[in-house]
Image (cartoon, rainbow, N blue to C red; front, top):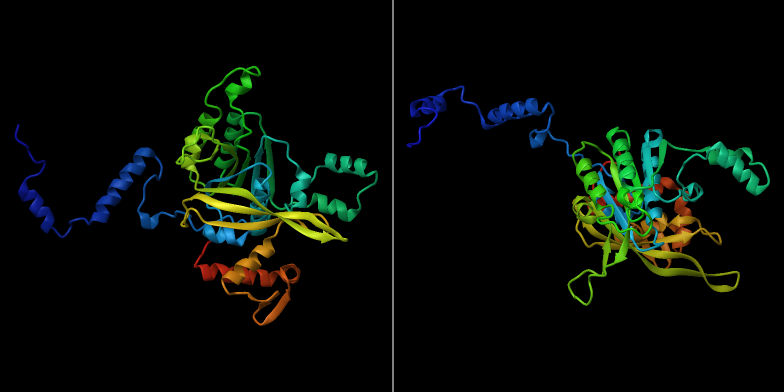
Length: 395
């Protein structure tokens, strides 16, 4: 059968010479309008009208890491993986602290946890969350005294809204997280942890009975549903690194692996692996080699936010003993990065900024900067400018 064109050649020529001939954009506008009406949602638009929101970041506070990921964690799924006791939760706490700092009372954070939540540990790390009256009463019983007014004010101090969810299996945990995300008001959701979540199938069976697939099916559904949402929420999924038993003696197989299946592997925007570094030791009261902290190494295994995979760095973490504050050494990391970008001068052991000496040794320089937060913010911004990074910390 011969092909019959829908319009005669004369009609096509007439349209092409007509002054009312629509432009390509006008034709596409008509198609977009029809598609959006069909699906009753604005699922399609021109690229110049679409706000990807990719400048929005959730900083970690660790400036060397923030520079590597273009300002902080983007919206989407973020994986923080590492071996046991390496500081995955501590890094999540730093992100929560920065969010409280940037959003103030507008901050909304959800903590979805399988393991018990040590609220006092988070509080000591600087996260501002309120203790309940029952917890305050229990604390007074343990101390065998009443809290002072200042101590009570500290325990009741909270910034923004903090929600805690305790679920037993992966389906309940991820469904709860998804419902919170769908509200559109949570900027940050922390899921701790992928490796600790049992599947509903495992939960229903007796101990020792075999199950297959683990929590991978639930994670796959969560990733698929989450990626369809129009949300600015950042989801941190803490994960464990396990030995890859299938690697054997193969020189090509990875020695370690993470849990969660292939859906999480493909769906995450950023994947950071933490490993333990050298121990930090000092001489305390004449006692040598007292361990006061540790260096943690970070490696970006994957990122889809403008930077390069494979970047490495480190930061120091202190245990909160012998006069050293508990937590990640944010100021020390800033000083090291500022020296790298030639913003802070280092001559011998002395650190100087704009011709003014900050202190002899990184510890004394850090003490001086802690007393002048405005200088800290100025140095931080200059580091980002020198690295050519611009981003937003809130909508």
